[in-house]
Length: 571
Image (cartoon, rainbow, N blue to C red; front, side, top):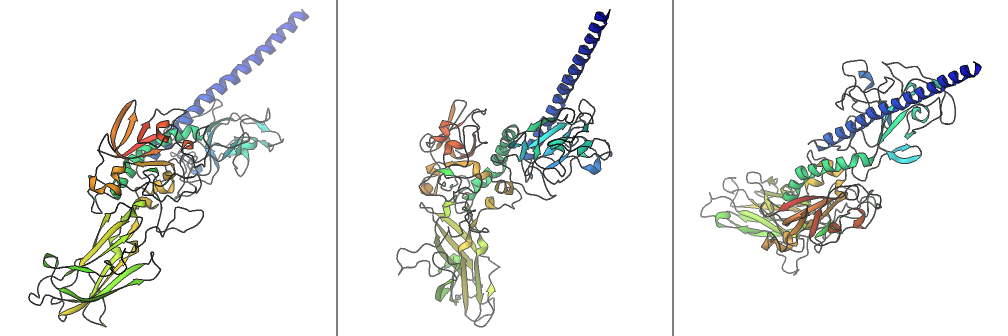
């Protein structure tokens, strides 16, 4: 009887242990399911936001649930901003979910890394394929971008290494994360160090990490669409549709030699080279930046005046005038001089003198005055023609005040030259002397600033449409290629000829040989790649994209290749 009773007790004990083990396994399985659902929702939310026009921080994650919304009809909505790293409840309503709970009936908790959510209401982040998560998980630094936690039932946490003693007391309306998470996960204030395991009896958090590997492929797909929709049209219009160049046959800038683009500041100055048709997008900046070792692409003196070949024939020293349909009258005398600085970066060129009206027909319009100048290195970057940088003035006689010409304001045109320079012509109509009730002659002054060659809006981090591209530094991940027949070297023979001097893109085995210009978006660094680097193979994987010929490929995106080809222009 004793033996039978003992065996029965042992059977009951083992059965209870087995049942407890089964219940624990089932709880973990249930938790894994809801954690995975939350993870997918977070990644989906990030992608949806990233692809939206007007999203200035594509790639950002939401903050945790706003504490003030708990227990109200707004429960589950993310806070607008949060101090990072931050720990809070999962913003299930913002993510489009029902309220997810773990096997013990507790809502899920959520941790987000610095750099991946908005720390203030109006914030600018810098997220791209080189960005890392800043959460340490189980001792591995930068291991996670975010964490989702199933907290499990309340525990009486015992003091031990990495654990602060706490008898968890839960308040559904004013939850304190220390009453739900334990040990390293409950450090207050929250730090960036988290764990997936802890002492038995004092730790029951079930943690699921979101890594850059989870998030970046979706983000890169969204960014590809944003580039196609918002950046490509601007690139096509830099030297097309203006600058005396047809929008149907735009000219594209020369490429910058490939050098270390980052992450970090890199070493490239992003300055185009008239002998290069592949490399980095020439994203140098000439205005609104400070020259420093940490900002090598700031090149304020890149564009300068070009010395005339014959110093005795300074065709740009004197303004030249039109008559006939261009106006009536003549220049009697003029002189020109530089304004501040030194050659070739003088701030401005000024010409002034005396002009006369047409004595026989004094009512005819005033004459048109013009100036022409040549500037270096224009096609070595993304430049814009800023017509406000030319001013024309007139006055009756000294000491009368100069009157700006506004009735027929100055205009400017630009023509590119094969060496990357450009010729700028500015002009404007001087006031009719008779209608101004002046004498039969007057004085004029025309002032042309070097910064008439300005930076294109694509370089402006505050631009409402494309500023995100600059702030998030996606230009560091673009490899740029232009057909030689689409640069200033071939203005007379635009566009390129398919099958002869255009670029070719191969996709799914089909080759299209009519591409004028394209960019390749490099994805996140793969296991066999090291960045920063000066080697293109550390950014692009496809052999066709790294062999420096005119054939490029849109490969199938998988774990070993993540190049994305984006066509800028084609015939």
